[in-house]
Amino acid sequence: MRARITGTGSYSPSNVLTNADLERMVATSDEWIRERTGIRERHIAGAGEACSDLAVQAGKRALAAAGIAPTDLDMILLATCTGDYPLPATACLVQHQLGATKAAACDLSAACCGFVYALSVADAYVKTGMRHVLVIGSEVMSAITDWTDRNTCILFGDGAGAAVISASDGERGILSTHLRSDGNLCELIAVPGGGSRTPPSEKVIAERMQFIKMKGNETFKVAVRTLEEIARETLEANHLRVEDLDLYVPHQANMRILKAVVDRLGLPLEKVMLNLDRYGNTSAASIPIALDEAVRAGRIKDGSLVMLGAFGAGLTWASSLIRW
Ligand code: COA
Image 1 (spheres, protein in one colour):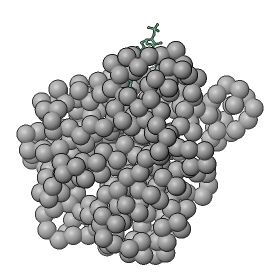
Image 2 (image 1 turned 30 degrees about the vertical axis):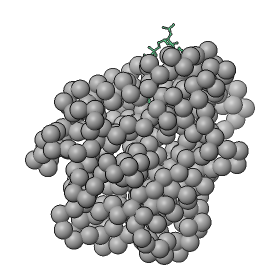
Image 3 (image 1 turned 90 degrees about the vertical axis):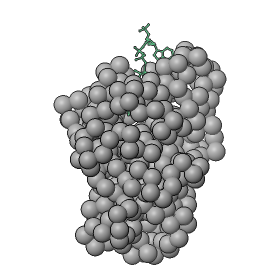
């Protein structure tokens, strides 16, 4: 028995922030952003629109695609680093809004790897008896972005993506998931203030410690190395080759990172799902949004061999191989 993705969905807020808009906010240019990152625009949540609001919309679409009712869910796993509140878990707010009255619900924090980590948890639960698990990646990155810092504010966007994972007989489904971390590199991407180490205070606000800080250049190099390594490890574990892949769905962080990774793997760009030009980096939401677009565009069909690849703060990196 395998855990299979039986439905996907995604949701993006209607506000769009273009590179031209950013030119009016910080010392940057559309040309610089496109050349260095590949991003043209990103969606930004409206006033009062929180992580759970995005997650509920994506979750509803995934449930509709899977053809199951909210009451069929055994569990909701929400990957996010921008939940509505520190407490309770945002997944519980989503559970209530969806009316998933029989579902357990909790959040999972693994930054941009959150969706793949959550998928691996869902895989394990389904293999040990659960029937349907809703996995959501939802982020309001704009809430932790410093809109005066040109090094980071050009990169991120808001959105949500979701997938229903169901028990299924046969060969199709999640073949394997591979998860890694290296806390020694925790300072490459961090929000230093607002947690138990440095609780909210006037000093935190004055020093803008509630926002993401990133060492972009170093992160870039580690991302290329870890994404290549984990992709190779995943294929080897399944006795498959790069040529066997139908589609690679990577975390949409930076076009240059992804080009370097697929060059090293020897994977043609036509086999890579790319939408970061329209979304920017939506952290845990990035892979499920890309996955949903690929499914709806007919780029993933029954029997397709699909690999997910993620890296992010922690540092964490992860991958999953799926026979659709
Ligand atoms: N517009 C114009 N210039 C900018 C800029 C911006 N938005 N941001 C930085 N610069 C400047 C820098 O200040 C620097 O100027 P200097 O040489 O006068 O000091 C110059 O551009 C080069 O900066 P550098 O950081 O070396 O650029 P880069 O080529 O590494 O690109 C990133 C910067 C952030 C785009 C790139 O490092 C990156 O994408 N890293 C990975 C980040 C990531 O994906 N993080 C999320 C992981 S989940």
